[in-house]
Amino acid sequence: MKELLITIASGLVENPDAVTATVDEPDAEGVIVYHLHVAEDDMGRVIGKQGRIAKAIRTVMRAAANRNHEKIVVEID
Image (cartoon, rainbow, N blue to C red; front, top):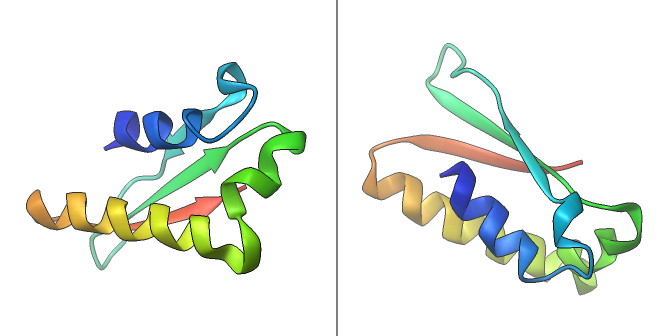
């Protein structure tokens, strides 16, 4: 899942080397939080107009997590 998030974000940004993701341990409800970190200049590219790209990234990640019977949240830091 972490590799999928990095692959998606790397395709959107100008500086793909700066893309990293960290994963938190599941909380009491079993939700895993993924934190996406990109370069400051690329933040707008990942968020998109009115957050549309960020919403699309979260949708794709949730769909992939559903296939693995996981609950996830993606946060863009």
